[in-house]
Image (cartoon, rainbow, N blue to C red; front, side, top):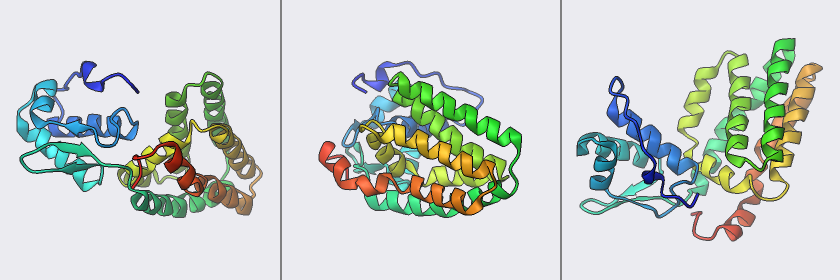
Length: 231
């Protein structure tokens, strides 16, 4: 994204915690790569942009630092961190452990409603791919996996995983536009749903495992295509 994201207006919801809103907005900009690694975040500029005192901005930046998305230099600037591959690998390990078990459970408790919902999301992803709309593609991808968690009645775990996945999300953002990756994601999703639909737990689990390990097998290719983005 070449446009300065801070040129776009931000509307603060006065009924919600201000620091949380700043955190959510900055995290979205970072994980979607609207704010790229090494981008500088000046606290005074952010306070002016959000129309807030320095306290909620400081609190939001501190939380981003704890998640490993920014580095804070006292009395200086805050800088968006390069993508931490080790952090991404740990988040992927956590997600894989959970989703493999979820696939097993869904295959044992399959319903037509679940298959229809997941199938509709795959169709939305295919449409986004045909339009070259990778922002929408990634959003629908998230919705597909969140639906799996929700259908297994463990949606709270989805939110927990999301909190650990900032670096993984950025890594996947770099990977998805690489030729062939998005088409494989769609094919993988179809394979997962097909195995769940016929109640084949072993195949559903194997398909999830294969699907979720794709990005981490391409680290060097991503590093070569985006020098300076990964640590």
